[in-house]
Image (tube, rainbow, N blue to C red; front, top):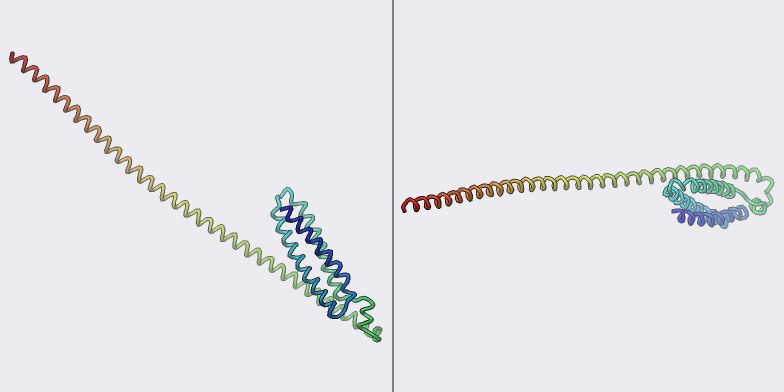
Length: 224
């Protein structure tokens, strides 16, 4: 698990370095070129958010005795992520002096206040957009947790159903065993009864033969 976390750390470092470099270039650009770079950075920031989610999941899987160190590292990465998002928001509404003069031309002095006002409005709009995005991510995370909880519940119910079936089959086998034991007991009792009867018959037959021999000897001696 820790090896996976470290691999995510390397990806995080690579992505954030690229984003930082691009954020520094955004104020120096204008027009379509700036728009494309902003979209590119926004996409990479989304990749970093997904990476952070994976890192968070990995930390939860790490044994408790080692988890504290990784939680501290993850917390610092989250702080770095928040700073990147703030820098990105500022860079989207910032212009270098060269770009500002190019946009305003000769009316730079008279339009400076309009640019400041526009910048404030855009900052406010971006702030609201960011809040909506955070709320959306929290809702998605809550929904994911609910789905996972439902899946766990279904698995538990399935396991309980399986265990119930196993217990029922065990009970059925116990009943069959009890019935077989009762039948075997009756068979043994019958066999024992027949053995006793046979022994009694043998005894009676032996006694009869012995008595016949004694009588024969008696009458034979008396006749002489």
